[in-house]
Amino acid sequence: MQARTFLATILVVAGCAPTRSRPTPPPPQAEVTLDAFEGALAVDGEWIVAARYGRVWRPTHVGAGWQPYLHGEWVWTADGWFWLTDEPWGWATYHYGRWAYDPVLGWVWVPGYVWGPAWVAWRVGDGFVGWAPLYPDFVDWWADSYPLEPAHWIFVPVGSFVGVRVDVVAVPRPRVPALIRGSRPAPPRPSGRPSPAPRLGGPPRQLVETQAGRPVRPARIVAVPAPADARRRPEPGAVPVYRPTPGGVRPRPSDRAAPARPAPPAPPAPPAPTAPAPAPRSDVAPERGDAASERERAAPPPAKPPPEPGKAPAPRRPTEEREDERPTPARPTR
Image 1 (tube, one colour):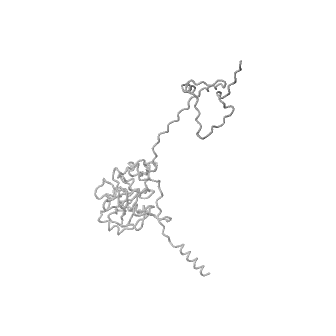
Image 2 (tube, rainbow, N blue to C red):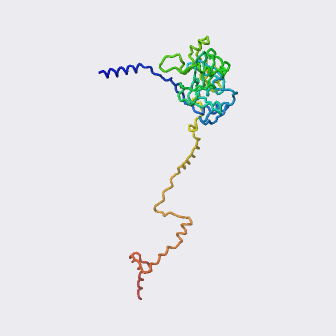
Image 3 (cartoon, rainbow, N blue to C red):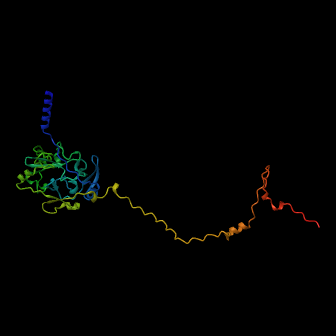
């Protein structure tokens, strides 16, 4: 009895212990293939092979000191903090895939196929908001043990976080290491728990409103039909999003239709029916007027082969006697 009571007590205590829930990942999106990015990004960059990540893309029309998530602004949406930029490749490289820094190649983009408002890690503290690109090495879209490489982090004052271009208000890089030490992670909202944290991470909306001294109204996400349309806002209070779909991109080589084969030639038409020939008369022998039939009639009958030596000829039947072998009747005497 005491053992049962002790076991029940353990179960009750274990059930009341707080459990750490993982953030809810973004919902799966429509399938996108590499073909959706290859041709569209080739105009503003180059596709190369990185030893660690394979086939990647690198922008070519950027200045010295360029890094991702610097030339643009943050917008609050129903999906969380959305990165809006006028860079022509931003519709793909900031909402699909991951950025990585290669010591030789510099910043390269590793393709990915799930859409998100932004793929960054967040930190908040001391009146500043900071973020850095999520690396491809992390399978989860968020990790608490994210590395703190100071050169990859960008910080801005909380009051200048919304509605201002980041490259104008970003903190100088020499101050970044101190801001990293004075800030804390701002991960996504835990699943199943009420929390002011955004669903996909970042500073709480209320914190930004307090520091900025004005309300932060959510912008609507508006789908646009082409990548070029994602660089300009369709209307106030909206952000453009281009999401390629399987029907809107070139098919993969395995999905391309086979070349059409020429149609087989039509069979020849059957000959037109003709009247049947009259049946030959049975009382009249068929006439053959050709040269072959004349030769057959003129040719003598074939000679019989001589009997083999030592073999007696076969006896004749009475009906097979020749006319020259029949006895000649005697003439009457006068």
